[in-house]
Image (cartoon, rainbow, N blue to C red):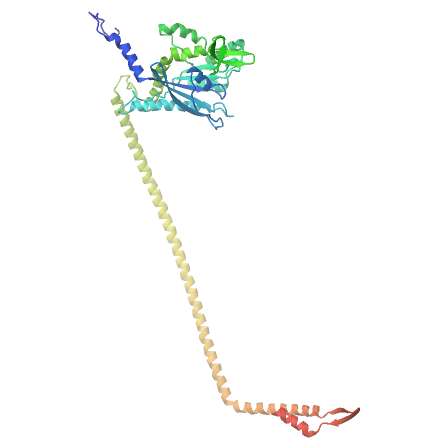
Length: 463
């Protein structure tokens, strides 16, 4: 009616009242997907609660909690109940709260959520889209596990939820709530709600616009955060087997609303508001991400005069702006390149000039050294020639002297030798003329060597 449509009566049955049934059949045939993000410190029972919620045992590899940072581990399971198929993805934050410095613990979670939004946006922007068969990995619900301290929220909890409230539907729950008494639990819930409000943290509120679920959702909004206990062990209570946790002092029944809020969480999360969580993720959180991303890319719904214009015009305007910036940057780069080339040419010319100067200096130095060596060589050649001349003159004089005085010298040498020989003979004759004592038969005789014997010895020595 607001758009000018007229209401007209029908004369008979047409059949479009079966559209809800058609939608149901189509949805059932296609199947559903639901993605849950479990955020909380190690040891708060996140995996156990997931097993309890879906009444199964999710097989998974044990995770190590010695990582330097927070890592998100995703596991997808195919579930079927009656004729409805559900593709469930459970994302666990491994190592959350284990580090000494927890300042950046939320960043990995935010980046993971944005990555799923970006993947869906890229699929939407494709020319040939396959959204009907695309596996939607966007996080539909975030179960934030709060430690049952009984005092107040930790700074890590407040900072993380504040960073996530605009990106995902946060449902706070108090894990292992059987660790504190009922009175402490009531005060703890009030304290948590007060701190969330005072810090501006927006948690998911169950919708009250649908009349069929408005009453129950309004009531359950007052029970947030849910205090839950998870267990897959069955204990016999009376005549039936129930999921429970046994303690020395008693038994805590998981599905007993007097013991914990597990049933309330299951009703609100799965049986009543699962589709609303999916719709809220698409229409609110994803649209916010999409709008911000397109605005960053330069797309707008209105022009500067607040008049709407088409996507083609926006694309053309953005393309022209981009091409202008590209040409401007290209011109700046060209000018910068020319400037750098000129600077490099100047540097090369200066270096070439320095090399030429250095070459000239070395060439001049080489010529000076060469001239000195040639002068020295000439001087040595002159000295060598002079020495040869002196040697030749000396040899000539020596030969002449030898030829002129050779016979006189030989005669003089012969006379000198004869004189020396005579002196030697005289001394020898003197020594040989001494007396010799001869001992014969006990008597001693002194005899003189004969002169003839002496002459014989001298002649033998002379020969």
